[in-house]
Image (tube, rainbow, N blue to C red; front, side, top):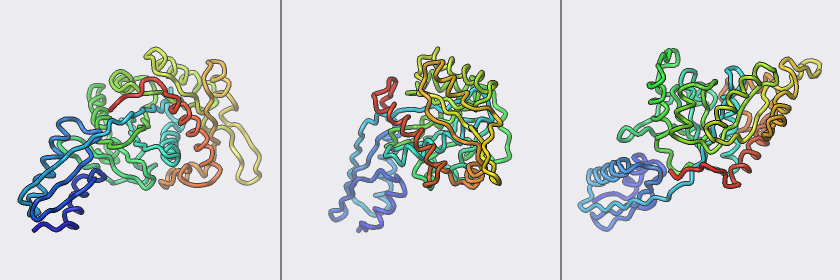
Length: 326
């Protein structure tokens, strides 16, 4: 005779978050599973695995019902024209702040050659599981499931891939089992290369957030990224100015090693929303290195990211174009 509690635990381990109900009547077991976000093959695999598990646990007759609510999933690409502007930090904190605002958010680290999200999200060493060759995102302490190439290769292993291999890796991350997530934040590599083109052409982001420092060189490259999205018909949600102003920890004097207001001025010139600025502060760097994103806390730096997320959420809630049924 199957045991109710044991079956519930086993089913939850098999399909985390997907078990809606389990009913036992003698040796007859009836289970309802949420198959939202799964492909046809994924649904078949989930049903087969559930049937096999229930039979192994002693059920003589097994009934499995799959339900699926189509999710209006919006993709937010976080991009920059060049590296070193803090794009990944902005992406991680944006994802957390959106989740804290009530969205069901997943995070894709599409920076194939330089993945940093496992460290930022405090899940270094965690490996994703797979069901029928479909990856299952790794849960993080901040309520934002994550998939990253940094979870699939050794930390010190160089990823020397040509374009098609990188595009194939992106497909594994984007087509994973994201379940009920209604928003995916995508941390793109810097620049305008193969991964960006694949993401735009195949997955059609709802909108893009551009990250730049105030300095002229970064803004030139940021304009290139903006131009790429514009030509592809992907709306730019707005521009974030990172590393804007440095407060001396000893005297409190504010200096601007990367300039001041450049990204805001560029946004105004281009007719794009300015989403906010993040200061150049060692506290952000040390918190990020420790896997403690400021957006997860209540300090002033967290508030800066929350403000940016509020503006992004408002833009998404207006029924932004290119939202895709997944």
